[in-house]
Length: 276
Image (cartoon, helix red, strand yellow):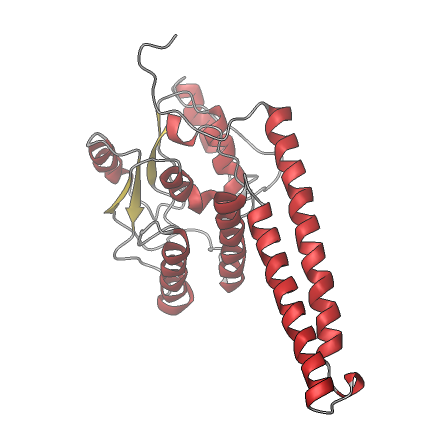
């Protein structure tokens, strides 16, 4: 996979493809990012097992047999863990460690290293997965939520010899925002009214509470409505509550339209027995 590189990678890939017809090359018209490259690889893969690896030589291909060996023990995804990572201690390692712990805490899928691209996937577990933003690192989460078995093993990691990493602190913010999207889609994709409607009802309750408090202050505390912000808060909470419920209803209609128009199901089947 060539993601619009300018360092001669495409030329080298074409040379390998001429020597070995098993080598398949995909070249993007421009740089679309790692997630898009990962998505294209998944979409066009034909074998039952998919193992992506970066071309920066920091991951070691010698670890691939170990991933396959672990996969054969009954797992659907085996994730690489750069236990002795050879990157900048604070800018990359510390920030990545914090991000990984946050992702594990929010998702409930405990992995030490979500950012390691060296992973082994069973194709049937990730087929149909659509990735956006920086969501390629969340594939194990998708698989786990769909009932897949996920584990990790330590892998080698070498210092970067060529090129410059394009990852910075801003990427951590993007990852956290994408994680919020993933968490929302997992928990409320088929029932968005529970989230928006729930927040709407909370706002209505707060509206009633602030309104009652304003009335009590008016009649028992000799405090005029214009002397307190409570009436304004009552109106704001009331409007927010109504808007939340209406947004939930609209999201429900969009969800049903999506599933019916795409002929998608709200469930995933692992296998069938005695069914044609």
